[in-house]
Length: 206
Ligand SMILES: [Zn+2]
Image 1: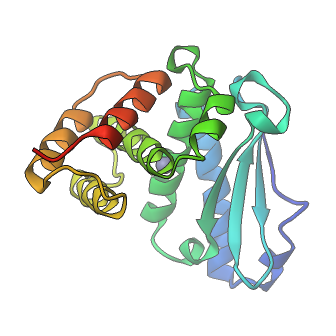
Image 2: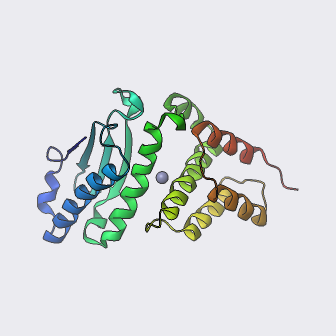
Image 3: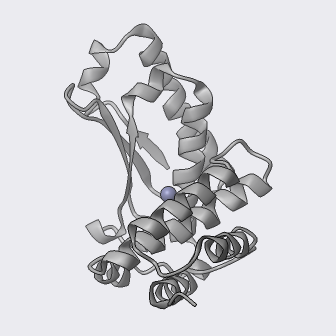
């Protein structure tokens, strides 16, 4: 696996010394965590792009995810340049989280299917619920590895918030119970995440 970074990182010149060091740390964490997650032979490259000064965003795209070289197999994640000069912990948290999604996508047992996902995203509730459940699965595993990640409380709040935004007909107590069950799942695959999202979107208030 190669980290491609020089081509599109022109704005780095305009960053402070602190932020530049933060960027080096960002790239070294990509390498370290990709190694830890055993992605080095499964993803051919991670391309880091620093966007223009207006947004100062970093985009990381992973090539050849899900065994395809076409666009369908590419996973993107976004990070803010603001984090480069903030706490290192934030950088590690973000990369641990995002690379865990990639780890799932390249895992045959996870059965990720980008074509189906693209189709489901047209449904407002499912496009909100699927990432929500997948995020819980990602962060609960990071928590079980005793790493500093997005906390259970924070994920729980987000789940409650999403349930309100999506007008799910489930009361607060039941949302708490559902979250608890999702957080404790040991292993799940993408088709099961989809089914759980469909189940939630169809639930009716008792
Ligand atoms: Zn995520």
